[in-house]
Image (tube, rainbow, N blue to C red):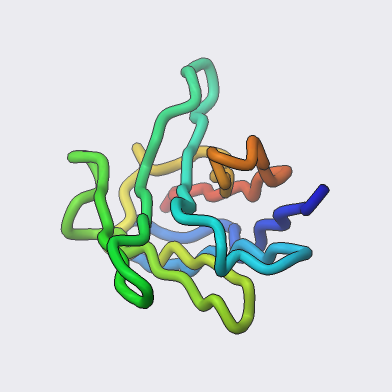
Length: 117
């Protein structure tokens, strides 16, 4: 069974940027949907963004309203990596961020993002 490993989290000031990476141990080419979720302290895990195949080499992205316009999800099928570029970060974005391949029931271990002055 494949594995997903997130990286790129850390401490950043409000208004700052981070790029999260999710490296898969196997090929993600055949996985139609990859997604990012997050879980803040004391809250349930919530969906953040998805990237879904719409054609042989085309994909569509969708975002939670809370991150729309600030976060960008992308994937590199050659590097078997999914990214989450985050900008204009807010304290409310503080959470553990998880990468997922929902159809494969795969989850990473998570990476902590803390937004604080």
